[in-house]
Amino acid sequence: MSVFKIAGICGSLRKDSCNKKLLLRTQQLCSEHIKGATIEIIDWKYNYSIPGPLKNAIDWASRPVGDRGHVFAGKVAAIIGVAGSSGSGRAQFVLRQSLVFLDMVPVNKPLITIADAVHAFNEDGSLVDKHFENKIIKVLQNLVKLGKQLKIDIIAKVPKIM
Image 1 (cartoon, helix red, strand yellow):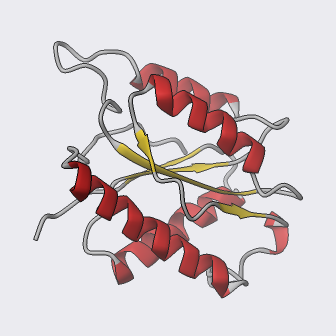
Image 2 (cartoon, helix red, strand yellow):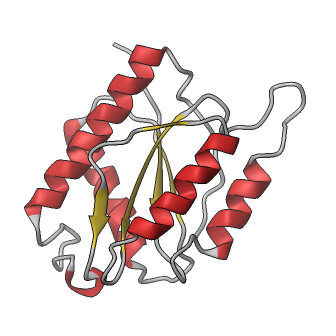
């Protein structure tokens, strides 16, 4: 069986970020349910768009590295997010536009936009609504499945934003 590495990017720099919590929970669910993984971008909205630190990291990582091109080219990506009332849906739309330039293949379903970020997590870091945890497992499964179907190199090294 192929082994895949996961790279998670959190768009928030805040120590107690709900999207950082979502990234940590996604990593836990991945280790419990998925035998491999790929790039997952955890996004949050900022004025209906993606935050500056995330955009800056993507821009820097999109620069060619020698003759290999940039680190995102040809990778499969899933985008999920937690935010206020919109659940990061608008920011995800903007980020999907960037994936086109980055030559990435997005996992389109399930769409995961978790609203009411402040109340979305239990004390242990799990999501209050288990429906979202099941959707995260499904999107991770779809990520690996799509990577295998397309025979895409899904191992990547990307900058970690904290």
